[in-house]
Length: 422
Ligand SMILES: Nc1ncnc2c1ncn2[C@@H]1O[C@H](COP(=O)(O)OP(=O)(O)OP(=O)(O)O)[C@@H](O)[C@H]1O
Image 1 (tube, rainbow, N blue to C red):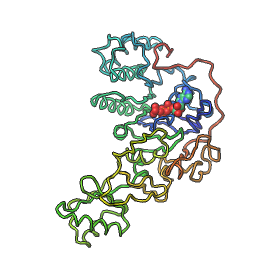
Image 2: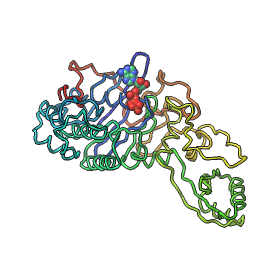
Image 3: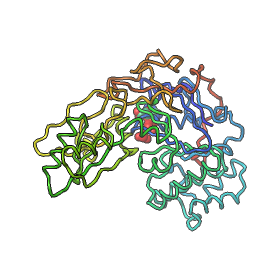
Image 4: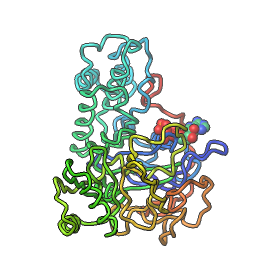
């Protein structure tokens, strides 16, 4: 198990990670999500002993990485697939890593087979494509047959077949009881791969829970309603009736209506009462991407001035006014329906849900005993809408952070670099 307690990393006056506490358990794929610059790589580097925490600590199986007995046999990592000696063949690269860690040479051929690089094993890696480099990095991570695996963007550059392969590999490693911690920006992929999610924004914990809970708590289910295409007046009539009944109705691009705020039987009754025939009435769950966009919209550092996430916006019907913003419910017109937590705190998971993050010190009231409760947050700065409402609860699974451990004397070891001792 990986356990972070009050993990904080500052680079000068830049706080990359702030008071982060979480556990990554064996037997599951745990996805590590967050916008660009939110601190994922920094956290992974601290887990692997490549960076020292400014305060707090992170352990693997109870030990900081640098004190872990026979670390390369226990922990494998892919941080940067380009961190290889390009002049060496794939096989020689892996052989040098194996020799440094006392791993038998036959294991090199095994992992080359696992990642599908047997045919190019004797080619210099500098000629490798991005996807081949990723496979070589994954082979290096698997070399010691470790129980704990960290992957930073493992599907980066892979083709669809490669993405499917990585997905199945992660799942099978977890099914063998290993701890698998994987960062990705590909939400659709994470939805298919991860069992559990840890989401950070601006270095702070936003959510820690199952994928299902995350989607359920950060988006509402919705109904798709379709009236006969041949009678557009029925659509307008139903829209008015549903809105009067308290629903939030948005037009979908194919002419259907997306309805939130009313249960399906009530929608059906209203349609019946207003004499509107329906061609479709179906329940839907928002996607992980929609839930993620909703949660992190206030914690995004880098956003194009022209791209207003147009692909996730609903087109307004001719003459319609955009809806008014509702505090805590994100940006109006978003594809993702409002969170069921009416009244705000879009970052907060509910109390009582296993793995949920209780309200934290940076917006919502602190839960008693919450790590970091009452501490000033040097990293917080005003963010629009959601972040200002209830940003960054802190997980309550673990006790408050102890003092930072003494810095080990040994030099950092990068398991992705052949020149480093593993
Ligand atoms: N060595 C460093 N010196 C100064 N600032 C750093 C250093 N490493 C990271 N940072 C800063 O810390 C913040 C977190 O960076 P980090 O690379 O951990 O984010 P990330 O979530 O992995 O981002 P991405 O998704 O873009 O890879 C960023 O603002 C980054 O600029």
